[in-house]
Image 1 (cartoon, rainbow, N blue to C red):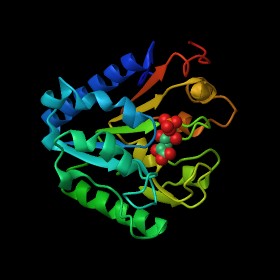
Image 2 (image 1 turned 90 degrees about the vertical axis):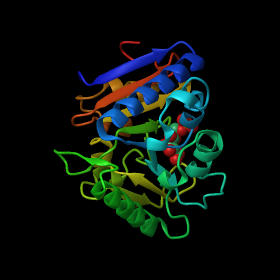
Image 3 (image 1 turned 135 degrees about the vertical axis):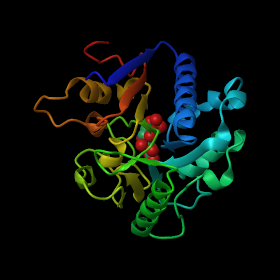
Length: 255
Ligand code: 6PG
């Protein structure tokens, strides 16, 4: 497990600072290497925890014009709906930094979940062709510079829920579900091959309710127990970093 790092923080404030530093570093390295930075966001508490990026020094030092934003998962609701991951990111983050609006690739919110997943796959394909997103030499999947994931108490990441057939998807880059156990039921999500093709993946989990799932994901790999979805996030070539607070790390073997 050499490509997995655990960063366990005493406080949410420390975690947020470290997360902002980490994102800013990967952004800088990607812009240096490729001229652009392709980042995928999720929903949930992660967005608040990224908030320090809107403050000094990051608001001045990050090369925002080179950012291209995507979503690892999105709820199929209007962009103005309170459940929209796009709206959450816009209100809490995107509206506070000078990102170029045409670089923000949110999902089509006026079609069915199935069509929205198809459309999003198409958008990603176009941006792979134009090299805004690079491509994995091992999987032929898009290789995002960074995919940020939250984790639910059940161990779900993006909209990949435990025991759901979408976890088995091998061909599609973007799938849809209409039976999410966490409302709202209709969602689109990156598939595991896309998540595991990224250059960098971060899983951010805080609070006691995440402790058991964090343990299952981090410690139970290789045993007979079916791992939680977060446990099958294992980038082929990229690097995985877990950002945890003390409470979420409290059941780890090493914790
Ligand atoms: C979603 C999110 C989801 C989220 C986790 C953790 O659309 O529901 O993308 O994957 O990241 O559920 O959310 P919390 O950090 O708020 O618990």
